[in-house]
Length: 102
Image (cartoon, rainbow, N blue to C red):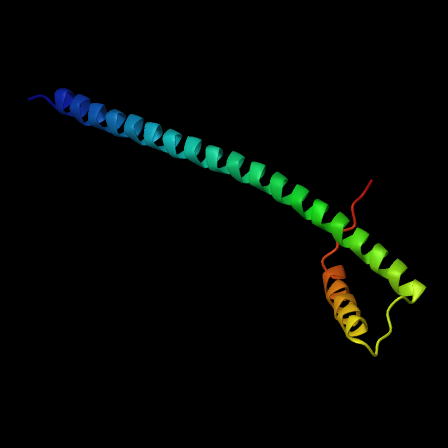
């Protein structure tokens, strides 16, 4: 066999390997793009959930402060103890508020 024939066969094999590699890489890139899009959608949903929870925490905090300012509950009875515990829980929740830009 001539040298030219051997070179043609070797180059043909190299071209086939390169084509296979490109196709394989292309499939993997498409999978990554799909995963990236799914993650972006999930992040948007999570961001909306966090905003909703932040609004609920803010509303709860405002209402609890209104009730506390009126002094409906004494701290020496059971309801007063429960109210104190509720205020403590609210203070812990306040740490998780997100300030939403309007």
